[in-house]
Image (cartoon, rainbow, N blue to C red; front, side, top):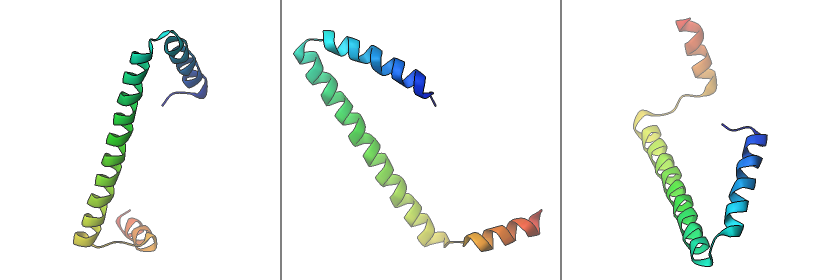
Length: 74
């Protein structure tokens, strides 16, 4: 993970390049970023579905049960 300072530096560099870009390039960049965002949303939804299916198949364990299990195995 990047530090806040590193992120700011990257964003500033991107802004410089964006301000120099042609309009059609900006449109392409926006489309690309929107696709990335949509893909991440789909991945998140898939992970939620998988977690729910796992919980349905394998059941759940409460935090208290988990803590008790760890004490027994330690």
